[in-house]
Length: 117
Image (tube, rainbow, N blue to C red; front, side, top):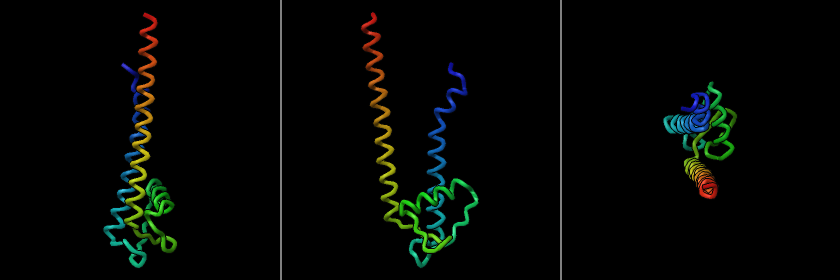
């Protein structure tokens, strides 16, 4: 059985991805709960947690959240949808590459094993 320290790092990217996704959903929900869906309805988001602040900055850079003046934000629903569509597409591409490389590694290992017999 593999050592637990070896297993844990394999889950680290998934844990980080889930934390990022949760932070982004929370930002979106906070803006929706406040009715901040237009520039005139922008609200402050005083996040103390580092991850939420970083994700807010990323969402602003992507255009999914707009900053109308320093510290006041609103959700751009159309850009939010585009942002998440693009993220999903990139994720599917990454998974496809990993599966393809895994299949290639399996095929090479099978051929090497077959030839050595």
